[in-house]
Image (cartoon, rainbow, N blue to C red; front, side, top):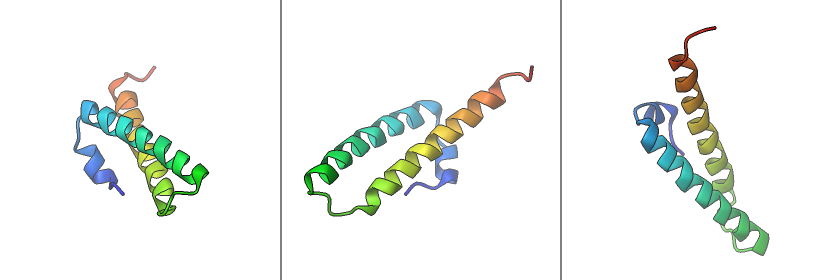
Length: 69
């Protein structure tokens, strides 16, 4: 699990790279769960929430960079 404070210290490129890795992991976990090979079921939840954290922080950055209209 990644802390939001750790995510905020990273650049946008690093966050996009981490987001891509997490989405790949989520894809693999989904297949493992479907085939009955998934041992750590809590990891699915952790990955989903880490993806949400990264997307939230990236969204905050884009909204704060845009002028209010």
